[in-house]
Length: 275
Image (cartoon, rainbow, N blue to C red; front, side, top):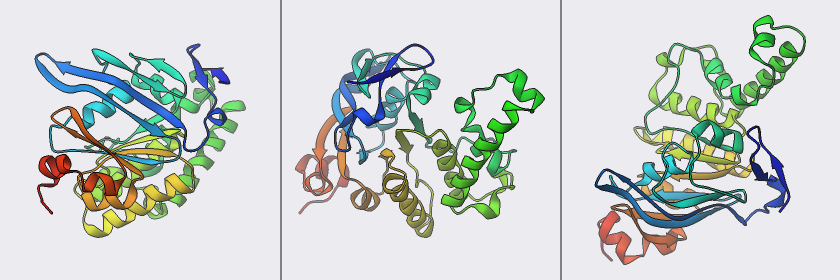
């Protein structure tokens, strides 16, 4: 497989070496425990390039822990992650960003005193090549780079239809718009794989419809592979290409939305209904 070398010298498969529909990321026999509590037990699944992959399950099933393993926040005691052809077990979150993994959080994690534009601009920091000295001068190459990054941010603002709040401090925004700004900051990192942790938590119906539309557009128009955690089963079934179901840290089902919603183990453990 063709590869390039990242800023830490790690070989990474080229994006064009992985065709749509092929495996972009594999979780292989991953186990994670905190003391005597097992958060994840011997879980394996994959995410294919170009798909929307849902991870669902009851509270405490291990969903967020799994995202934290994928983006390097947690290091599993067993198992490995293979992303773009490179196998690894331990990695820091900022290295994951450089490799092409970005995420949003269950609880909004924005700089509340900064504007929408500046919060999204913060997502471009890992893509900036000029050192701090050039950035302090804000002249010559640093100024040209700043202009190019601001163009990219303005395009994201237009894409998410938040032009009217571009100068508004995010702490003054309603919750639904804050979640959209957080999505914009993640998109600013230009990820190959976007991890969304409950992107519609706390939203009303109209806000959920808007967020669903943006997630679909991110996937279809921008070509970004998406893995999401979501409790709204209707949203999951409408958006997802495939669904993996966790319960008490174990995988109990994996397949298309239709296959999963008719799975007896899923009905018993998560949906709580019977046919």
